[in-house]
Every structure is written in structure tokens, then in C-alpha cells.
Picture 1 (cartoon, rainbow, N blue to C red):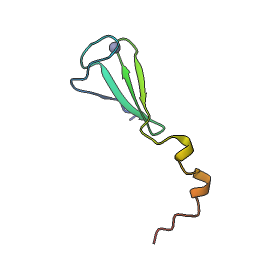
Picture 2: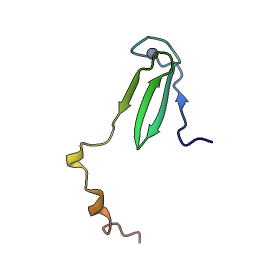
Picture 3: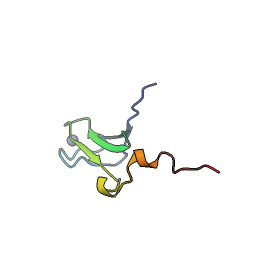
Picture 4: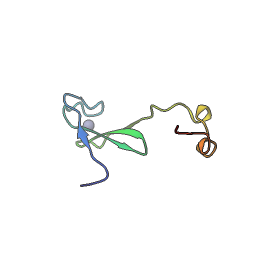
Length: 67
Ligand SMILES: [Zn+2]
């Protein structure tokens, strides 16, 4: 068991080398990353809002009341 589990994307084509089924995806620090195992192409998909629109994590502590 490894912390980082990579999944291959079936049918995905690498934008760099145009090979099929060589793209692996995994999550790292809540960022979905895609990497081609053939040419080494790497892309990070940041689907989070910009930092200036995200609440400060330190300010969130104390606000959440699970009731
Ligand atoms: Zn590639």
C-alpha cells in the first residue's frame, strides 16, 4: 500500500507525445495531477478557487460547530 495511488485514465491521450493510455492521475495535497508515464508530461489541475477567495484555514477553526 502506498500513499500515492495512481490511476490510469482509459482512453486518455497525452497532449505531449499523443500516446493513448499512458496518462496516470493521482491526488497530491488535494490537487489532481496528471502525468504521462511515457514522456514525463505533468499537469496539475487546480480545481480550487483562487487563494484570495478561499477562507483562511486558521480562521475556519472555531467556526465549525457539528451539531
Ligand atoms: Zn506523453
